[in-house]
Length: 346
Ligand code: NAI
Image (tube, rainbow, N blue to C red; front, side, top):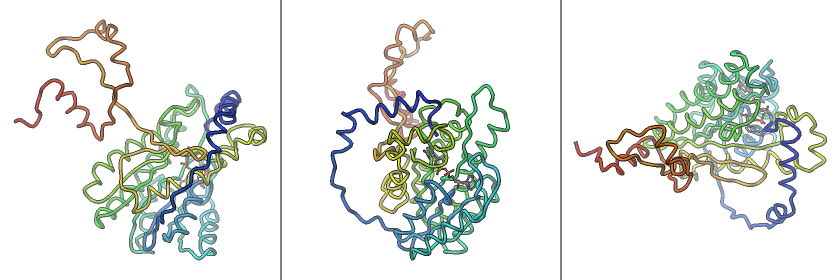
């Protein structure tokens, strides 16, 4: 779903199958086996009827969670509905000895979000973690994007993230514990052609998670995001020639199962951090962060001009050294520090 055209996936495929990249990928590192356990915990996974969401739900249930399997059951473009999509995954979990309940509500209304959270609380009596994963996808050049296309995409991904997390946050706050995993996208964080609406919605979820993380911290609530890559219908329905891509082996490399570990970890009690973003691509798990360069500090009291910016461009545009602010305060206090102002002196 992140390829705009043939040359994009040709480039990626070339990179992944370069002998040096292959050699590094084949060095097997022994995995540390620790039990990430969800016994007595309740987890909501939205969009859990298909693709990556289904795999998150199955693994969470296998590790002991009671799972609310939410899915509207619509098309990739967001049309239609089918209750069988969520029901099938519930049956799959139950057949394996797990516990789950289906929810067919859409995440894209406040009532839908409330109903999904109510499913957890009414059926299982608590809510420990939310994986906000439901999503739709369309490919549209920016100049052809209509206001309706824009709204529809934001309604499902960004409004949906809010409608779900808002009632969930209240339940978690009163219990003094909670985990949010918002499924964002590299398309949003780094850019993806033909996806202005999708990228904006997905990047918006990072902003939402940042603030939930800050406000939730005193209440034991942690919020992180995942930027996944996984072979699903979003990939097959957008690449144009999935058969060609399959022949290169690329689709095997981006098995959706390879995203599951980081989502499950971030949803678990074991997750000891908050306010972070992780990319999961083909078995490579990596932190994604927004860094703040040291920049150029104009002489205090001077009136810097556009010419001064041009004169100091190397410092203004430098990416190193950098810090990763934990909030807006880290940034502004850092500048005040350099200016010799003690914000707390009054
Ligand atoms: P998918 O299309 O296989 O699954 C998405 C599920 O969400 C579907 O079952 C659909 O019925 C459900 N859904 C859609 N709108 C809904 C709504 N309003 N309420 C409740 N359920 C709804 O897609 P996939 O690939 O599994 O994607 C899962 C998430 O990961 C999405 O948020 C997607 O944007 C994101 N993602 C996926 C990537 C990939 O490589 N597959 C890359 C980056 C992000």
